[in-house]
Length: 296
Image (cartoon, rainbow, N blue to C red; front, side, top):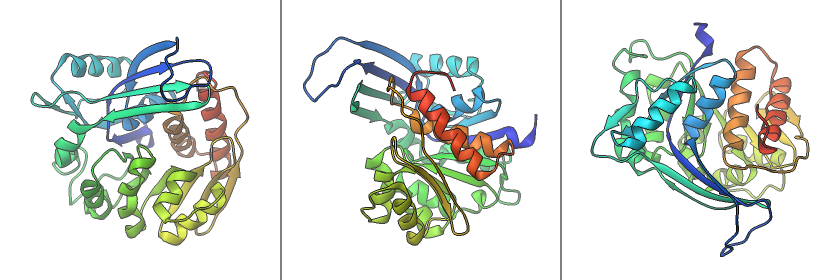
C-alpha cells in the first residue's frame, strides 16, 4: 500500500434514503419520482469517492449490530471502504438520512446521526491505542473529518495531540451544523471545506461571493479554506496563496453528496501530486459531473 493513499475518514456512516422528482418542488408537493437507498453520511460519502479514485479509505464511525448495520458493512466492503475499526453497538441503531430533491435542489432533509453522537470519543480509540497511532506516535496521514460529530468532541479533536501530526481536512455536515467547526478557527488548524453559506455562518459575515467568504474565514482564524458557491466561483485560500475555479453549468440530476465528492476529489488530487490550482479545477469539474449524474 502506498502510504499517502491511506486516508482516515471520521464521522457518519449510514443509509441514505433519497427521493427525487425531475421538476421543481416546493414544501407540501406530492410528486412521482424515484426513491433509492445507498450508503451515505459525510465521512462514508468521502470514503466511497476516495476508493473510486484509487485511495485506501478507512472509516472510524459507529454502526449498530442491527440488520441495517450488517448490510451497510457488507456494502462498504464491496465498495472498497474499510470499516474494520468501526465501533459496533447493540444498544444503538445504525444512523439514517432522508432527503427529497427536485430540479430546484434540495427540498428538505433529516439526518438521524444520534448514534454517532452517543458513541462519542469511543470511535477515536484506534488513534490512541496503537492501532493507528498513539500519544507518543500520533497518526501522520490525511484525515477527513465530518461535522456530524458533536461540538465538544470536535473541540477535543482540534486541540488533541493525537491529531497534531495529521493533515486535517474538515467539512460541516450541513449549514445547520457549521458552528460546530468553530474550534478549528480558534485553533487555526486544518483545511475547511465549506460552501458560502457555511463560511458566512462560521465567520459571522455576509459575503456575497466565495472569495469574500473565504477572506472572512481567514480573518476569523482559519488556516486554509476551500469555499464553494454553487455554480459560482470556488476559492482555495490560505495566508500565502489564492486559487480560483468556476464549475461548468450542468443540468442537476442529484444534489446529496456533491460537496463530499468535491472534497474527496480535491484531497485525492493533491495527494497524487497536483498543484493547488489544478486540484481545485479538477475537483470542481468532478463535482459538476456528479451533480449531472455522471460517474467521477
